Every structure is written in structure tokens, then in C-alpha cells.
Image 1 (cartoon, rainbow, N blue to C red):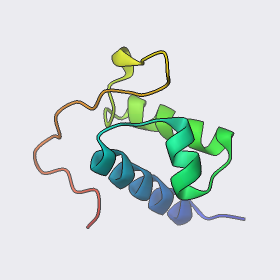
Image 2 (image 1 turned 180 degrees about the vertical axis):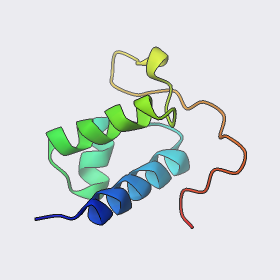
Image 3 (image 1 turned 30 degrees about the vertical axis):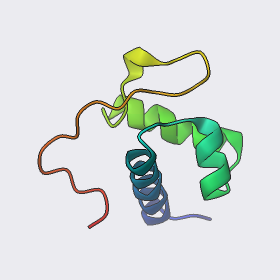
Length: 77
């Protein structure tokens, strides 16, 4: 059974991937992180909730605009 630490590490990796590519999509997270659809979709939803990606700008093909990076945000310590 995965620990909460594993979930946090996966979330950090997903955030770093989104920042590096400047776009977020469930399919990209699936491919790059080798996840199933539900896991990748939960990560995208969490990023939208936490302001990592802009939830108001969901585009028809599933990508999300990134808001400006908040000062002091450390994704990969």
C-alpha cells in the first residue's frame, strides 16, 4: 500500500513535469509518469485546486494554462 509520502513525491514530480513543459494534461502525466487515467486525473484536479494550474482555463483538448509561479514556490527541493 502506498504511503502518503509516496503520493507527495508523485505530486511533486507531476508539478515539476507540468512546470517544465508549461502545460498540463492527463494524458501527458499518464505517459511520463506511467500512471493510469484516474491517478493522473486526480493529480491534475489537485493542481487546479491548489493553484498550480489555472482551473478556469480548461481547454477542449485537456490542457490547462499555468498561472504565474508564486514567489518562493519550491517544487523540487
